Image (tube, rainbow, N blue to C red; front, top):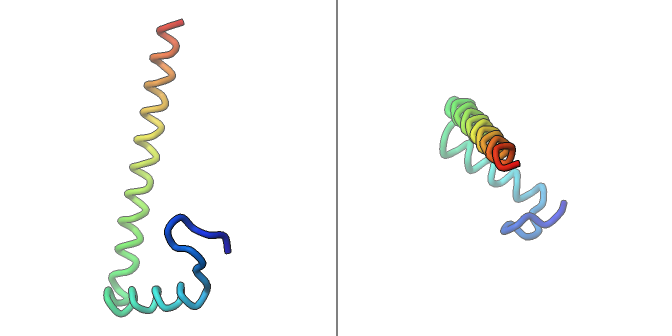
Length: 64
């Protein structure tokens, strides 16, 4: 696995431990809700980026 920015060398064992800790902290019923919220956040972020790119393209078209 490649080095991630701040994680260094992380292996499958560490990922399993983190997943178990998250499962213990939040419980099995909360995890799907958390993932759904995370997905909505990512989608909103991507939509915002598309709008900014669209505005930049429109501004460049006006200058030409």
